Length: 447
Ligand code: B12
Image (tube, protein in one colour):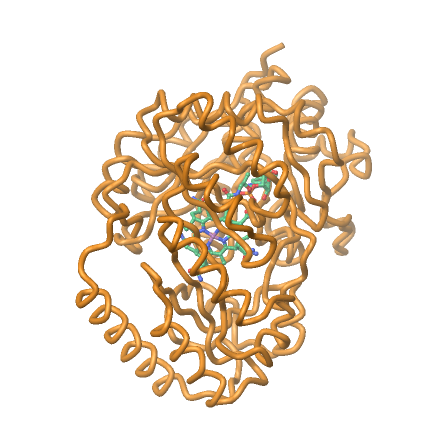
């Protein structure tokens, strides 16, 4: 059954804000779109990345959707509220729904202005909610016809109070029933051109597994939760073959913990070798649970780079971060990958609450002592629903969350931003110099 005036899904990121940003099509709304289509609900996807604010407003307002769902992460709340304000003026009869990583951790922030908020894996209930809403009348006042508490993950403002339910997750074994994300609305030619310019590769992202059983102090993972789930490889390879057919030459497996389950990882690699898919891949990895055998297999299966959350050169700081790994394990992992011919990128965080200038200097020393191809520094960004956030709770204002990749604390820190900024740029200069002296690496660069 088709519904007139169906659903529009919006990803409110505008490229002009940061033209050197890595660009990946937004998978959250692509997953929701395919599941809405499966239920017979008419859906359009608006990825704002290559558009202007006014173009987006005009196009969406012109199509008069009954529901507008906006996907929001921590840097996008201002854009989301601006879109909401402008669109509401033009579309008073439309229901506005917020979802994604930020509403998941702070539903109250969005329940004030949006009609409905979804927390967690929105694809568990949002498609069913849209179908039911559209068949029950499709105007905001018709919400009362629905039993809102039969939609896990939903938050809503009722009689001046916000009623919210906890983030919802797919249970084990259900990922195999989900359709592949619908990427048909994305401008793949522009994504490929932008990534090729930045990285030399037509790279795109995909999610294979969901969930992470670890509890790093700074990590915001309530969308996926702690339960590690893995879909059947048959399904994963349908998606990979689709991406290769779209012209992508490299994949970024953006899972929280892709290398967690060595058996699954090995089966993935064997399948990649057997099918001979013409794409290389990169992934995030923890530094534990790695053996020369699995690393070698990853190389043979086309892995060209791993991103490692090394974070610190001090075991005391790693303990503060609850990383549950040691500096020595990190060093071993970098050497394992490097020896196998897989490029390595290290993420480091400096200025952690409770660490010392000595431990920060150990981190800078570590970066310069490792055979890394890339090094990335951040300072702590306390995300809601993390233990770190609770410890530094007196944040200045939500506007500060717009800041990404800058040395600017959004809470009162014991460290001086100017000193940290200078030490980071000195270290990066020394890092680049060391790489120049070492000569060009044989791997493709992904930055
Ligand atoms: C890929 C990625 C990026 C990419 C691009 C994002 C993109 N276009 O997808 C890049 C590298 C650019 C990036 C940058 C940043 N990222 Co990022 N990124 C990711 C990553 C690894 C995967 C995203 C993804 O594809 N997920 C898969 C899809 C299917 O999941 P999803 O979008 O969450 O969607 C599900 C639900 O959220 C929900 N949903 C989503 N939208 C909607 C909309 C509606 C209406 C509804 C009902 C439901 C709903 O349903 C979906 C299906 O279940 C996530 C980690 C993760 N595990 O998700 C971090 C993550 C999203 N990033 C994060 C952060 C902090 C950043 C940076 C700020 C980092 C920094 N310090 O610079 C920057 C911001 C840059 C910017 N552009 O504004 C945080 C966000 C935290 C938060 N609470 O908001 C995450 C969760 C990582 C983390 N654990 O801290 N990121």
